[in-house]
Length: 420
Image 1 (cartoon, rainbow, N blue to C red):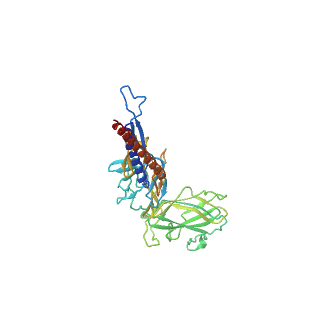
Image 2: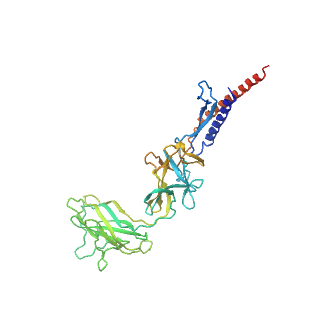
Image 3: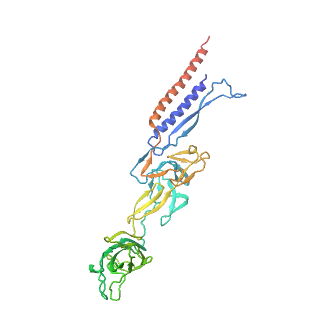
């Protein structure tokens, strides 16, 4: 026995205590991965190879291996907090270089970029002006801050039932239909459409039974008939004809074009005309039951302001607007590696790729073996504090034992020196 074995044991155990201490210190660090000290014995070599009776010359620290197991996911109140449930790393732009992290504590900076506490930008795919994701080279995600422009209504789809038992309400021949008189029509319903400025126009549909299986449809825009004769009397915009069994209409075929004139809406604004608005009445029926509208939809909307952002499980960032519309604003791209333990730690909860880790395998959350994204949540450290405290006690005992071997060797040498 020599001092070498005991000294190497002290050095190795000291490194082990440093690793344990680092794990304990980062027990509350989000996205932190614990490390483990791994050791190897040392054997003295000779000209003819290692001796079969060599006791060895000690121990050395082979590596500090990081343990990339999944940490617990805890929910938060911040919608920009992100956690990856499964494989993968967030990609962040660190001054032009790409680094990788599991810490999803993100925020918006003054320019709308998603950044972490080190001001490094989260990377992903951008979206075009209509919300279509543009996959390709990942770039720093910049979320919108402005509103969404309006869209004029171009189509209206109605699904309803007209009561086959209703009486005919067509005025006598030559008499105009007065829509202010409820006896001149059987039923009515309304829908709001929008012009190019996003101004609302209230369309009212009046259904007048003209005869067996035939219904006239009158339409007014903000109270003004969209179709009228020379005297201003309303004219039917179309006539619905049903088969004898009351099913799908035989007429009109296809959509009915409606031309909405300029009118004044409820707040006194002069609305713009809408030409060629397509009315789809294919969903109408004529059964022997009460009148009822089961669905009415139009594709226009008013302008809206941004009211919130939401990350989906597939990484898509959805922008929500005050007019009820939503639009994709981008998508987070994540990366994984063939050998994650080959990543080089940088501090600040990030890693860099190395030759040992291999090239990053990128994709969107949920694809292949990549994990899914959970918004409003963070991944806790995977450090097992109880296990680390037990490991600390064990390392302390090992340190004491190695110190004892040095003490024993010193006593042996002292005995030898004292021989007379």
